Every structure is written in structure tokens, then in C-alpha cells.
Length: 424
Image (cartoon, rainbow, N blue to C red; front, side, top):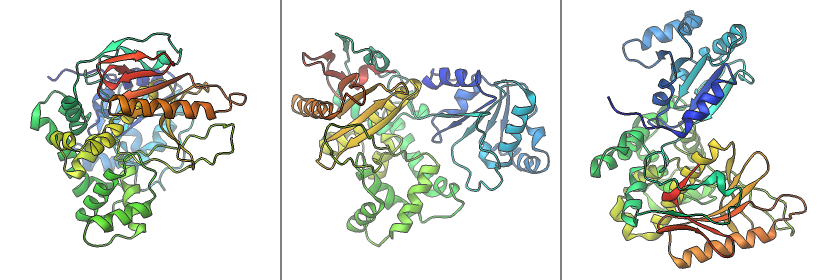
């Protein structure tokens, strides 16, 4: 039996079960939602089990309450196949008067929600699960804690032996649990298989509409080139037309992008809107990201050697990896990751904002003295713009590097942290 690797979501799930009657775990297919839920569930209903799927769907229509019988917490895996279960779970939570009754998992948003009459507010808690961070996969030392940086320590210390070849491999392999213990091409194949599944099947599950696989490929390839950019659908359409034969209209791009969001392939980053000393106009468009960097690599047909030969593309896809890890770590702190960009051209890759109003500013750089200095200047320029009479000053400034031997605090107070030393 394969050993279970502990996930940051484990503790979040336990806490949520103690506070709500049910917890819904959402996230990409293959990211480990069901396996994580199985660690605490006492009984199980696998809605998509080929042996019982027909009778499960029939029972969901005839007597959904019967499907909920079993020792608690009861796992309802791929619940969205039978949306009627949602209201029955909410009803059972209300009438059982007990917490931690159900764990729901889903790798897509239900295409039809007419059958759902209640939001679940107050009864059902949401948990977003992502692919594995480098700390969860054992490839970050975890010597630098993101949470501890909010206390602005005078000194930090961490070291890593990971090199640029390993980082390129991490980007192309991704954080798919099944791939973590594999090596070489076999590990890389897992992301390619995921991408192929999205193109030929999974994207159609989002809205029950069959899509042209070649169009999906062109769109996903274009979207991969937009990582870290605030690109509207019109720009994606233009990129598709420039780089491929045939035309795709903007409405089609919008439908396909929304379908990819519904199956958690895409997770764009919202804009951060701080109080500034000047009247600088802030851009409010979301920033484009795949949920895992390996999806972008697979869409572009790139492997580790290709990234090493094209450092610009490597930097873009490394940014997607860094954003993934920051989202995993920040989620455990009850915070959110934002992006800042104003019309004057000042841009900050990531703003970690916690619910208590504290925040940290982060620039993501592949590595090297020149890029690090660029990142430091950007962070200092943004920190100077913030009106600290109206909001708190940033708790920390950090350049999150892909490569670099050590984590340390500079004399100007900026933290330099290799991603393979970071944890939540």
C-alpha cells in the first residue's frame, strides 16, 4: 500500500469538521482530494464507482437520504454527479444537530444548479485543495516559514541544494501526488496525461457541451503563454489567431476559459487595491494562471531541457509554480494571494493578505543578482507608495527565488528566499 504523504489541507479539514456539519473539498482532478478525505472519513460513498454509478444516480433521484446513511464523517466522493444531494446534506446537517457529518469532494462545479435550492451557508464549509507544494512533496526544506515572516524576524536562515535542473523538472512534473514518487520520464508523463484528459474529456464535463479538442489545445497553448499577465479574452483570441491556423471568436474563448475554471484547471489571481499616497490608477483585471505549472508546460509541449534553453519561458512557468505554493501556504493561514499593477507600470507579483489586515509583498524571480535587485527595487517602490496613515505598512518584503543557495535577510530588510526553503 502506498504511503500517504501528509498534506497542509489535513489540518484545515480537521478544523473545519469541528466547526461545520459538512465540508466540501474542491480542486483539480488528481490533486489528492479523495485520498485526503479518506484519512478521516469513517464511511464512504463513491458516486462514480463504475459498479454502482447507475444505482447511485437512481437512488439520488428516488431517495437521496438513503445515500447519506453511514458512520460519520461520511465521504461523498464526486458529489456533483447528483446535485440533489446538496440540499439533502444541508437538511441532514440541520436535523442531526451535530458537527463533522459529511465530507464532499468534487473535481468540477455542477453544470446545472437548478436543483440546488440552498447555498449551504452556515452548514457547509469550503476547502480549496491544490496540487502538492514543494514542501508537501519533500522538495523544500521548510526552514523558512511564511507565517513567521509576518513577525518580521531580524534574521532568517535556510539553505538548499536544489539546482536549476531540478527546478525545471519540478515545473514540468508539477505537484500531482501520483507523480511525486516517480522518476524521469514516467513522472513527467503524468502531467501530459492530465492535459490530454482535459483536452479530450474533462473540459466537456464542465457544461455538458462537447468541444473541439484542437480548439481546446490552441486555447490552452495560448493561455500558457499568458502566465502572469492580465490578458483579456480578446488578447487570447488574437494570440490564437497569430500562432495557429483558423479563427476562434472571443465568445468561444470565454466559454472555454470558464469551462477550464469550473474543472479547476485555471485559477486566476485577483487584483490588490491598497490605499496609496498618490492617485495612481490601479489595474483591476485578474492575472492569468494555471493551477499547476505542469499544465502550462504540457500545453506548450515543453520539457525540462526546453526550459533550460529558454530562460524567459522558464521564468514565466516558475512564477506559476511559485504562485501555486504561495496559495497552498497562504490558505493554511486563512489568507489570500493577490497581484498588484498600476497604470504607471509598477507591478508586484504577489501580495499575501491575511484576514487581520497584515500583508506581505513578494516579487518572484528565477534567480541571479540582477533579477533579485530588480525585485528589491520594485518592492521598495510599492512600499513607498502605500499610505500608512490609512492602512498598515507591509509586514515584510520578500524576493522568492527559484534558484539560490541560501535564505537570508538583507541589510535593507528585504528577505531573499529560495522556494525550496519555504513552507506555510
